[in-house]
Image (tube, rainbow, N blue to C red; front, top):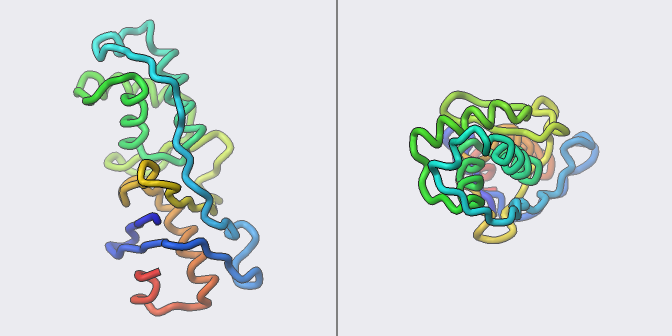
Amino acid sequence: SVTMTAHASHLAVNQQLAPHPAVCPEACQNEGATYQLAQLPLAIVAPEDMIKPGKRQQLISRLTGIIDMEGPISRRLLYRRLLQSCGIARLSPRLEACVDEVSAASGRPMTGSVENIFFWTREQDPRTYAAWRIAGDDNSRRQPEDLPPEEIAAAVRQILAKQIGLPRTDLIRE
């Protein structure tokens, strides 16, 4: 199950939903695909080595690999996955500045605010995004702040399409 936040209300999507085709356009008929984690090979890198200019291309490659597998993905989750793939436990301010530069150079679209940025694959268009994903297991469970608003909206559209109008309390429960 995925727990999402929308306008300070918590939505729990606990099942796959199929919208009625007459109510929901074809673009929002995603059945709640399973969220796939990027499986990068572990490459132990010392934090002080990670910020060296010679590592930049390796970091971009790892970063884009994660985005391409898990996108859209929040900045927080993307950085955590990158550090885990390099065997690094903590994001220091210097390392964060380095990863910020690398992520800006990745060429991947970004949306959101300074507090919560989301990275998208080159194939995804945030303006028309209509998919939502569910956790396959506890390792792929995301925190509410790691869910892009576009994905939350897609899940809500599908719930409403299936329910054809739903009181607010029932929507929150769904």
